[in-house]
Image (cartoon, rainbow, N blue to C red; front, top):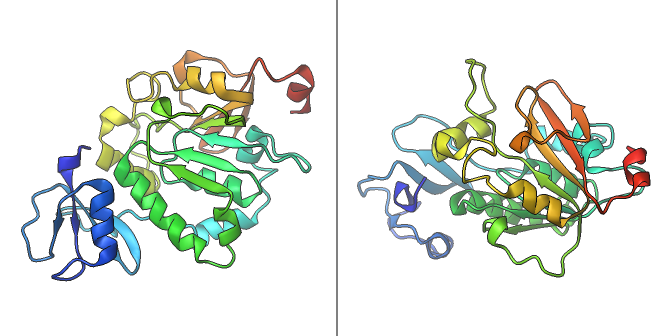
Length: 269
């Protein structure tokens, strides 16, 4: 997806301050609803939420909502007994500091922050980062979610070009997008939408330039471990066999202990 593929459509004939701020942030054209739409995708605020649509496609669009019923259920469940919690090392009172290098729609970063972790997350695609930032803004105004947002920080940039000097992270979390499915099984709406929006060239995990160098970067930063989320039957990222695995019905978490983690750390898991 390139900048020329996306425009912003205002809610009224005249754009408001929020829409103009989004235009300035993303550097995208801002058009009124009655103007011709030539871009493949467009952003619009609907019911107070920033939503991304594909032109000519009848869908509800792509939005991020941390207060959705599905995420509320997951947030209220115990994460320590789930694969994600086990993989990052949630145990007892231990709450690792996490660098999420590939935010996407932000679900896992949000869940980790919900359970006490401090999470710095990066999203290199500006439009996706804008969707995530909008969700964080709304969550910060939500009484139950505001404390979670205090533990979650988003940067709209490629983590490989970021300045991380002086920052320490126990865990680096990677969620490279899954390769194109060989079967016609349904995928979750958010992931399916991202596949359509970003194109398959963005989706090959570890074998293309979009994900090149992520594993090496993660191993160099993490104090204790690198966690890679994969499809249950997907190959290892960069063909590197993990030290530990936690598998679910559709996903698995590959854990790589770093040279900084001592033997006791590994034995705890």
